[in-house]
Structures are given as structure tokens and as C-alpha cells.
Image (cartoon, rainbow, N blue to C red):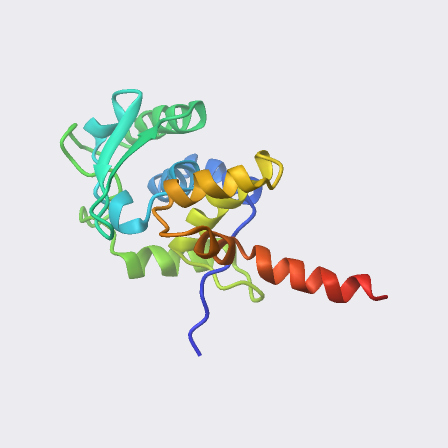
Amino acid sequence: MNKTSDYIEYDVALNRGMKLLNDDKKCIIGFYIIFSINAGTRISDTLKIKHSDLQGEKIILKEKKTKKVREITLNKTVKRAYQKLIEKLDEINFKYDMNDFIFVSQKGTVYRTQSINVILKKIFNSKQLQISSHSLRKAFSRKIYENMNSSEYALVLLSDILSHSNLAITRRYLGIRQKTIRDIYLELE
């Protein structure tokens, strides 16, 4: 049975990403984690990002899945992490230019989705959770939902950000209904 990806707690993912950002061999994966939990992009869109895309205050991309144009404002966490990545790449003499993709393996090729998923499973090493690149997108979504006091307005915004066709999909995506139902059973005690 194919189970959907679980979400990872934002702070757990951020801390793991920051730690990996300091690792000579895993700094790009560290930045991938940090970028993903702060941008909420699908992996197919994330892997297309180039160094030149991160020079401004925002990224404008056309989503591969939905074909919608999306504007992503780069927050301080992403900017600082990217600066740290650049410093690390310079320190280890990793050659790149501004038109190169960011998320490249040690072989010099852009990571494949399957490779990222295998790496994330090892990094987060959880037997209870189904971890994949999508778990990071869910971490982004949950963080926004919680920061906005789990409001209906947060669902409306997330539905738009995530390019969902309706709020029911966003609720299911966040696991809100499952949690509500579970809580009902627990209230009976």
C-alpha cells in the first residue's frame, strides 16, 4: 500500500538543515532542506533553481505540475543559509557559476527526485514516518497554518500558495481532519 508522505516538524527540519549546511559533503542537501521548508515548492520546481535565481528578493517560477506562475519571497533564513552555502562551496573549492543549478550532486549533475528521497530518509531516519521531499513542503504548510493560529484564513492562503483547487484538499493535505477525528475519540476518555 502506497502511503502519502508525513510532515516533518519545521524546527526539526531547520536544525537538521543548518547542521548539514556546515558539512563539506552535505552542504547542498542542507540548503535543499532549508530552502524547501521556507519556500514550499514541489521538488520538480526546487531542482530547477539556479544560483542567479537567489540574487534578488524573490523568485518567480512557473510550476511544472500546475503551470501556474508563483512568486516566492526569500526570507532571512533562506538568504542567510544561501550565503552560508556560498561560503562553504568556496571553502571546499566547488566550482559553479551563476547560471548553474544549485542542487547538484558530487557527480556534478542535478539531483534526481529519487536520490533526494533516499537521502532524506537516511537523514531523518524515522521508522514511524514516511519521509520524502514532499515532507518538507508539508513542514512549510504546517508551520504557516500554526503561525496563523490554525485559522480558516490560513487555509485559504495555503490553498492558494499550494495551488490546491479547494480548501478540502488543503485540510486533507495538512491532516487536519484526521487529527480532529482522532481528538474526538480521545475526548471520550
